[in-house]
Amino acid sequence: MTAASVTANAPATPESAARVGPIEGLRQTATLAWRTLVQIKHNPWELGDFSFQPIMFVLLFTYVFGGAISGSTGAYLTFALPGIIVMNMLFVTMYVGMGLNTDLTKGVFDRLRTLPLARWAPLAGRITADLVKQAWSIVLLLGVGAILGFRIGTSVVELLAAVGLILVFALAFSWVSVLVGVLAADPEKVQIFGMTALFPITFVSNVFVPIETMPGWLQAFVNVNPVTLLADASRGLMVGGPVAGPVIGSLLWATAIAAVFGPVSVWAFKRRV
Amino acid sequence: MDHAIRAEGLVKRYGETTALDGVDLAVRTGTVLGLLGPNGAGKTTAVRVLATLLQPDAGHATVGGYDVVRDAHRVRQLIGLTGQYASVDEALTGTENLLLIGRLLGMSRRAAKARARELLARFQLEDAASRAAKTYSGGMRRRLDLAASLVGRPALLYLDEPTTGLDPRSRLELWGLVRSLVADGVTVLLTTQYLEEADQLADEIAVIDEGRVIATGAPDELKAKIGARCLAVRPADDADVPAVISVVGELAGVAPEVEGRLVTAPVTDSALLPAVVRRLDDAGVVITELALRNSSLNEVFLSLTGHPAGETEQADDTEGVLV
Image (cartoon, rainbow over all chains, first blue to last red; front, side):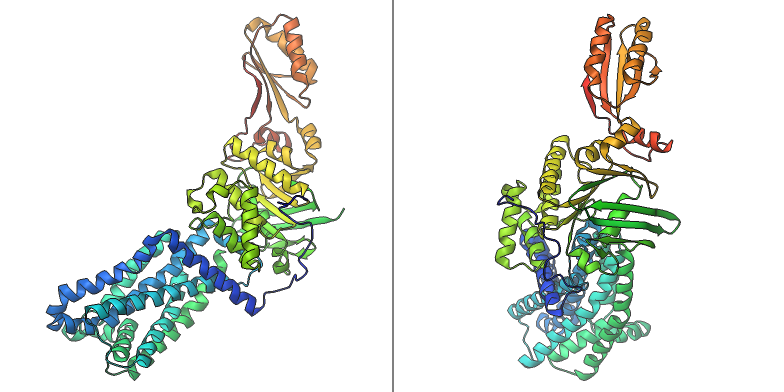
């Protein structure tokens, strides 16, 4: 054989195993997460997508609507920033579905499936990468907020609890994104879903405006909207105010979403591949 | 010699359509099996079953002695797949794609890097190593695909229509690469729509149509059976047609078909061409067209099944002279 020999005659590798151990599976997950994140290096626009867009929202709402809604831009920023972080989290989860859909339509997924990987590693890799993007967005928004005058009214522990809660919710909501990613014909449709479904859900909440001026029937919806609960919980943990109720509500929603969309997504996923 | 791949009675249905209707295949270790058939014949479905991507509805298959359903994980440790469907990540560079697979296969970072470099050099992709795969040409893409399927040094390689859509030069390059892999001892299952490709690369050919294997054999046996080449002669003058028919008929050993002034006959021996030229020259026949071309997949199907192949492009590779 030559130095550049491409293959070996050897049959199975000596460590040929019937399945993948959990530690090996986690290592594969980390490699696949790396793969998703390293793409940003080649396509910096993607970074812009989940960086500039939320910053633009903060600026637009604070300076255009802020004074009218809260009397001053400073007061409005304190009110709106935690909610904007929540909204942005929902949008960023769509990357899981878009990436998954790209892999499915372009054949990358088939290549991965012919490798001896843990069955859950490709999905777990996507979701892990998504959590990194989420953490980045949250830090970025808090940083921009701080520059504009947003002040944490609570403690570091509570702030971290808020970030943790948002990430837990992101993890649960990722299953919705997985389902859309599996069902959509192409990545653009995932994005269209993100726009058409997530905009109303986030706007019909108390992220941007207090709900008192809304009609009663709308308030009824807004009050149970998980986005409202999560925004309230984040406000409570970041700025101060009631915490227990909205946190429990958010966690119940997260559990319910994961319990429904987790199995459905896995089922749809197995059907497609 | 033992069999690296063995499939018996594979059936796969999608609703009303039967993609595989009882496919039997056997590939001896270290050889190339060419699975030849038109679009929709079931080639890709068969490969997907053997690559553990699909579960058959009936029948069973072993790869390297392992069952593709029960021991899928072990099968995956033996195989590499390159094809229409299994693909590289376009957003990553060539190096990153190979690095990704090396790391997923459990190589250390250093080993994965070394392997990536080695394969990029081997497949002449060094200059494009740090460019995103989406900027690659078709031929480069296929080479990177092939390299990606070789990172783990698989003992078995599935090539699903590896040259479909490639220009002739890239096709020749890829054939060369496949040959060098076979020389290294890899067992290859190749699907193709081109008789010529199967002929060039395969030790054995299985012709598949409508989910069934309708003929198997070494390329020469198969070609002899179906008359793999076609001789075409067109005289300049109508009056010479009978003379051409007699010369062609005598040398080909069959009664030629005549369409206008064009006389055609299936032939198995390509050494016939000079003899035809000499005989026609001796007879003083002036010809405007003389060609020996490979039978298209359609002609193969016509002769094997009596019906033309599906919506296949004709592999009308003309080799010879147009006067």
